Length: 624
Ligand code: ATP
Image (cartoon, rainbow, N blue to C red; front, side):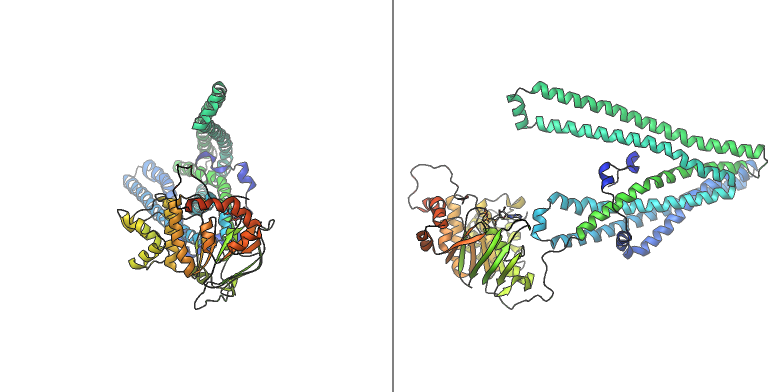
C-alpha cells in the first residue's frame, strides 16, 4: 500500500527494480474490473467535477465580496454574496460526501469481485502450488494486495481526477481575470513545489534510516532476550559485548530520530516559506499593473487570483507524486494478475467420464513421476489392485509411498505412464467422481476448528445421526465420543489440538467412512502412538480392509499382515512383492525392514505386559 505522508512521492530501490511495464493489455485488464460499475463511475466523475468546481467558487466569490460588496459599500449585495458563498461551500461538501460514498461502494465491490475470483482460482490450484508457495505470500495476495486495489480506486484514481479538474478550473478562472498574473501563477506553482519535494525526499530518507535502525534494535532484543539467546550470552559471558552492540544501535537511532524530527520541522518551514512567496509576488505584480500600467484589475481580482493560486499547490504537489502512486498501483495489479495467470494444473478433461458406479480397482501402468522435472521420484511403477482386495505398501522413509497414493485422486498428475481407476485413466475421469470414490486418510490428520459432528459432516453434510454413529463405531471412536460430556458436540479445538493423535486419526477414518468411498487409502502415521491407541486403530481398520478395496501405507507389522499383498518400494521403484511369508523367505529389502523395524512392533502385541516400565518406543520405519 502506498505510504502516506511526505514519503508518498518516492520509491525504494526495491520498488524501482520491480516497476512493471504499463502496457495496453495491463490497462485494459485493470479497466475490465471497473467496467461493470461504469454507471456509478460516471456519476463519481460528475460528482468530482461539480464538487471541484464548487470548491473553487468561494475563492472567486471572495473577489466579488470585496469589489461589489465592501468597496462598493453595498450591504445588500454583500449579504447575498456571503450567503451564496456559504451555500456553495456547503453544496460542494455535500457532493463530496456523495462522491466518497460512491467511491467506497465501487472500490468495495471491485475488491469483492477480485477476492472471490482469486479464492476460486486458488482453490483450483494444485497441491504442488500449495507445497511450493509460501502460505504467507498466498495470504498476502488475498488480503493486503487486494485491499491495496481498494486504496488505488478510492485514492489514486480519484486524486488524479479531482486534482486535474481543480487545476483546469483554477487556471481557466485565473485567465479570465488576468492573463499576466495567471501565467505567473502557472510558472510559480510547479517551481515552488520542487524545493518542497527535495525537502520531502531528505525527510523520507531519514525516516527509512531510522526505521532500519529500529528494526536492528528489535533484532538484537529478540535474539538476546529470548530464553535460549540469554542462555548463550550467559554461558559465553557475552553480556558486555551485547550491551555494547545494543548501546551503539540505540545511539544511532536517537540521533536519527532527532534528525528526522528536525527535518520534519524544516520541511514545514520550506513549505510555508515557498507557498507564501507566490501570493506576495502576485500582490506585487498585480499592484504594479494597477498602479503603473493602469491595468483593468480590481483589488477583488487580485484577491481571487491569490486565493486560486493557494488552491493550486495541493493538486500540483499531488500530481507530481501521482506517477509513483500510479506505478505502485500498477505493480499491485501486476502481482495480482500474475496469480490469476498461473495455470490450473489439474482440471477436468473437457469430456470427462462420469461412470455410474465405482469398484475401486486401481492399476499403475509404467508410472513415473517427479515433483519437479530435475528429479524423478517414481520410476516405472507397475501394480494392479483388484476390486475388494487390499495392498500394503512398505518401504524406507522417503522411498515414495505417499507419492504413489497421491497420484490416485490426482493430487498430482503422472509424468509418464498412467494411473487407471476402474480401468479408466484418472485424467479422463470426472474429478468430482474420482475424489468422491477415493477416500484417503492421510498421515497428517486435519480437523477444522469446530465440533466433532461438524468435522464429520464435512464428508457428508446430510448424514443422519445413525450414519454418523455407525461410521464412528466402525472407526472405533464412538465410545470415546459418547463418553465426552458434550458427545458429538465436543469442540475439537484449533486443528483438533484438543484431541490426541490417535483420536484424531480415528475421527478422520470415520469421516472417510461416512463418504463410503469405493477405494480406501490409509496412510499410516509414522509418529509413535502408544500401544493402546495403535491397537484401537488396528481394530478399526482390520474389518474395513476385509470389506473394501484398500491401499495401506504401512509402518507397523499388524497393518502389513492385514493386507492381501505387500509391495515393497525403494527409491521410487517396486523392488519386491508378495505375502509376508514369501517376502521374509526371499531375504531381500523386506526381510531387512522386518528384522530392523517391524519385528520391534511385535513386542507390544505380546500378551504379557512388560515387566517394568519401558521408555516410550518409536516404531516408525526409518531409512534402512
Ligand atoms: P514416509 O514413509 O517418510 O512418509 P514416503 O515413502 O511416503 O515417506 P514420500 O512422501 O512419497 O515418501 O516422498 C518421496 C520423496 O519425494 C522424498 O524424497 C520427498 O523428499 C519427496 N517429496 C515428497 N513430497 C514432495 C513435494 N511436495 N515436493 C517435492 N518433493 C517431495
